[in-house]
Image (tube, rainbow, N blue to C red; front, top):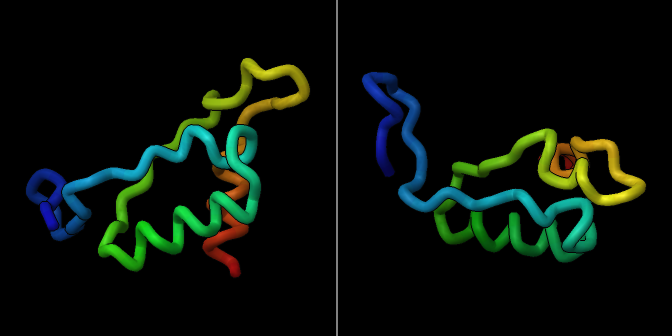
Amino acid sequence: MKNIGSSDLAVSSLCLGGNPFGWGASKEESFEVLDKYVAAGGNFIDTADVYSQWKPGNVGGESETIIGAWMKA
């Protein structure tokens, strides 16, 4: 774990990229990846509203929607 700057917020050294969640990976696949990442000690997930915005039919925010659903589950 590493602290972010001078804060007390400790994050895992490996950040999980959330780009494929919600468009390149199914909900079930995304949940499985997230579960395994956390089980391995991960707690730092990168995401951005624009990740899947370029794909026809997507508006952006798909990865955040999947991550939010996973957090609620």
